[in-house]
View 1 (cartoon, rainbow, N blue to C red):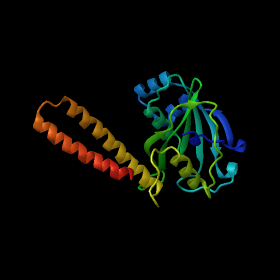
View 2: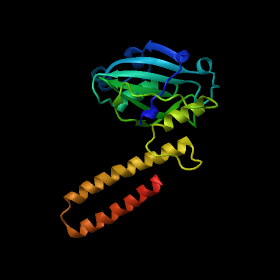
View 3: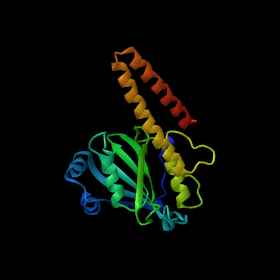
View 4: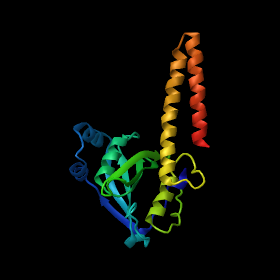
Length: 221
């Protein structure tokens, strides 16, 4: 998945530390979420600002700018609630570069203006690469006509399954959300099957599991 790490143009470099307090002021996190910030996050740097004035691509309503945030972690695990808190505080699409020791991963949620209120942002599921060596070779930025097109390219590199012909980013993310949900159902069903003693009940659960696996095949094809 190294192709999900990119060379961002020097003219887009922003390199500003983002104090946790600023995020707290905007996101109003619970005390439990603040504790996660303190325990898991070392520092946050607003690394790049991809905007019309920095990379010469026109803005779109769905992507007026794209922000690249670098987060140095204290632990290899980061709660998605922490990222959601940052996403709620910053009204732009964000691509995260998470670092821990000598490793890096890219992570982001599909973030879009709400259909009901364009001033509010909907934050969908998060997608990520695995951990990679921090010196992993980076790709050039994909070619795009505008910032919305660039955001789509960047985000699609993080998605675990390719788009269907003509599938929009929104439809693809929704399908992958259904896929995750069905995968969770499958795991629970398999665990129940392992524990079940009654033969008749085992037959019934097996039939349900086969049906779930068919649905999974449909969602991945």
